Amino acid sequence: MAHHRPHARVVSLTPAEYAPYIQCAGHTVTTGDDGTFWVGVKSPNGKPPDYASYTVGPFGTGFNDEDGIIAHLWDVTATGVRFRLYTTRYQRWCGKTAIFGKWITVWRR
Image (cartoon, rainbow, N blue to C red; front, side, top):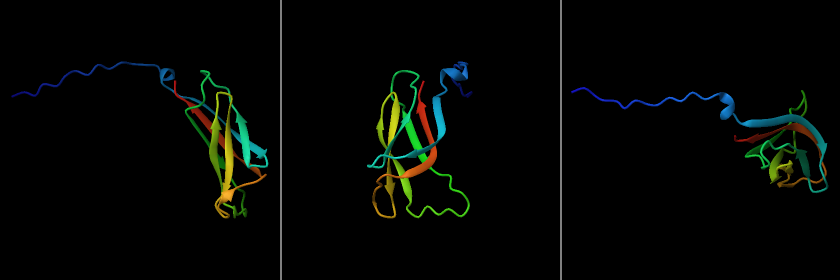
């Protein structure tokens, strides 16, 4: 008995039709007194990004991130993303802090 396999319909699409829209950059900032900072973005569709992240660093040779700074996503709009810094060393939100790092925002098409 022969096995019958249904034919799959293959549709060829250009990558741009499904490729996400991405914005990213390096960033140096001094936060507000509450440890928050704002990254301005330009939405391609008038909506907030579907994904946003911030990585503190990279740190140079010999630098030790003793406070264990983590950036938490705090607020997202179509024009920007707000992050708030947390210190794992002291288990609390940071106050005014000077940092550098990299951010990325992604929108689905």
